[in-house]
Image (cartoon, rainbow, N blue to C red; front, side, top):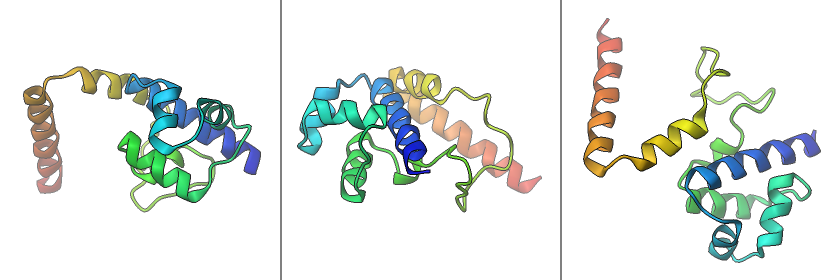
Length: 121
């Protein structure tokens, strides 16, 4: 199971790094490792320690749970009941990151409003 998690975590790391337009070198410099180490993380060759995982999550601006999402048998308190396998999170992140700050704020407000509508019925 450890090998499969390392591979899964590596894919999540690569997806987030690419969606932010970062090189392996930039990520490596941010957490004080070599770009070769980032390559090994992304391939699943090397596991990531808990302290490195926290550094990666902070630098990539994601919660640590991001790396566990969609891993078989992982259940978070906030897991969505619906089947999300069809969503392309990488596309959504890339698209969102290209928006202006004004448009990002508008979209966030729309999402907040739609959540409150759901709560009221």
